[in-house]
Length: 359
Image 1: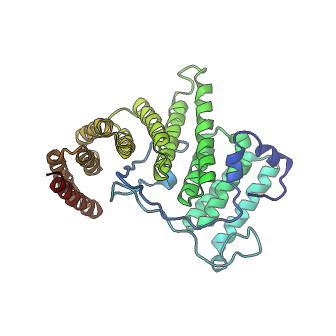
Image 2 (image 1 turned 120 degrees about the vertical axis):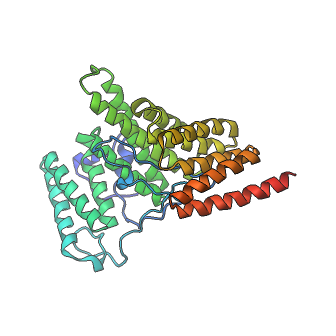
Image 3 (image 1 turned 45 degrees about the vertical axis):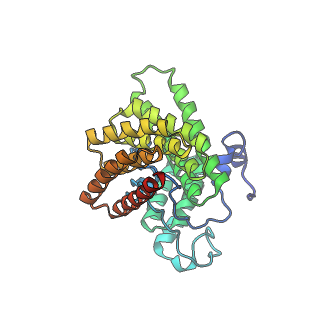
């Protein structure tokens, strides 16, 4: 990837271990977002992390829905058309409206503020641009604005949780686009920076930054979780397993074993172990996740039960698998989760085939 001439400050930013992420924030062509696909096998569940930079939720704020294990579709990109030659050259012609012009002006103001060293003002203006971009669902504007944050802001705010959360979202966008080098660079940047920040905070008295430390650890957990799901999707199972283990440890330490996110991560770790044929280990995690889901009335208990049944089927405990599938199906119907009902019915049909073949 090549870039135009950089100012001295930008050139310095592109050096060192974080340079790859900054370069990742400057794509020449901004493509549409590809639809996210669930990996083969048992798909992980999704529940929003708490804490983080603004107390927000991962990947744009939503818990990706239910259905076949909880993987929801991604969003389509901005409308088609040829890029306009003026301004940023990234908006389609058919979107030349007042809202878009406002985004362009905000981005220009942000860049000017950075050049003048007014980073606080730049941050404020970039947040305005992001808000307008999301409101107009202009995906190219969203990506470009995140890229500006990555390029111009990391030098001074590199360990600011708000900036790191934006960098994580940008990495997730690249992952959805299957731009693997950029996604990997983004995830590694977020995780490395957060781990360094946490290491520095260990030297401070516990009562000084207790809240900030907890938020930073949760943001690291969110980053590890997102990275693990990406690795699972590209079949990098051993590394995904390690990321899930770390994320689970953080959620357990900070939020407790009964927190919904901890339950989800137990299920997700079981998913990776199952995909590697390590059924006994997978069973121990998903069984505990199912117990906690029942105890806490987890909103996605039926999905955890679905995964528990699938692992039992892989262990060839067909009778127990059928019982658990039926309970999962009952709960899915009660919750009106049509997609999960269909999926569980398909799994029951697969179970019947396996039982017949084993006789």
